[in-house]
Image 1: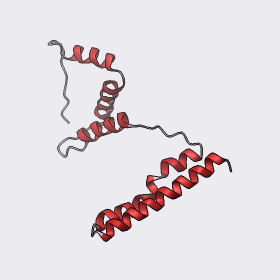
Image 2: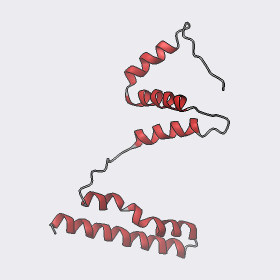
Image 3: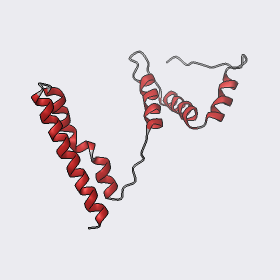
Length: 124
């Protein structure tokens, strides 16, 4: 085992010990819900470190994808909306362009805001 891996194992163990200590302190203060959450989630909180030690490349941030998935979920989970496969694909394509290619999105937005553009809605 390399020195770096040994150091990383030590840091993971230390983090887990500290999380358990924090859970005990919260329990002593009467915050049972928070203590239970930390106790149950502690292993998930060090997943990134464990994967990194195995050589798995994990992106540091995924805010863009989270925001994109939030946009899709916000539109799709509306109880009164019923999406066709084609409609969902169009929605996802528009959102992907919006978040990943701002220049193309600006062009599309300008095109669709033109007064002569007609958007057809098919009622089933």
